[in-house]
Image (cartoon, rainbow, N blue to C red; front, side, top):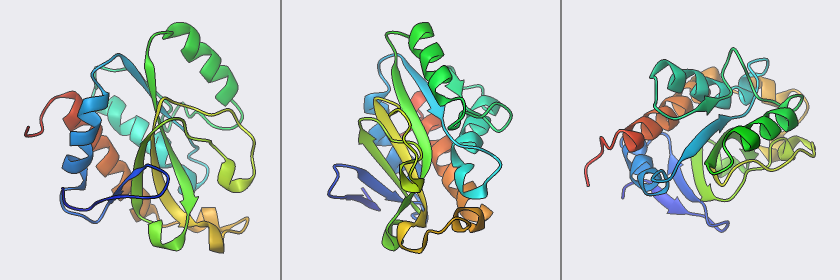
Amino acid sequence: MLGIKRNNSDSIVYDVKEPNASVSLSLVLRDYLSSPFVIVCIGTDRCIGDSLGPLVGYNLKNLNVKYPVYGTIFEPIHAVNLKDNLKYLNAKYPNHNIIAIDASLGNSKSVGTIQFREGPLYPGKGVGKKLPPVGNFSLIGIVDSVDKFNSSSIHQVRLSLIIEMAEVITQSIYLATHKAVPI
């Protein structure tokens, strides 16, 4: 598959600039989305660099995907309400897998990539927050580099990158859940 790389953390990495990134990602997601699942999009619209999750959630809700989606531009899941939302979701969907989606910081070479892996993501880790892990599976968009991170750089991420990443993630989930990708 074009544009797919594995990194040293067992993630499958997709470059959003690859022409078929959403199709390639959907082929992998399709295998993991056979059991009941909930999509949890983490972040806030108060910071461009952290708005990836809520934007994906908003897009998926507008597409009326048949799976539960939590965390949108209008009802974000973020550091302040994460624990309460996880408690609610675990009670409401005890037998569902959670696919967690969030923006993250990485090295400068990984900016603009989406990483998929089995296992949870750790919201706020890149900015020193200690929050509970989220998800059985993770989709992480690398929006900026750790090496240039300072308190304001997450606010200087280009909106065009966030929109592009959100479109790839949204399309890949839609294609995978509607079995609209070639076998």
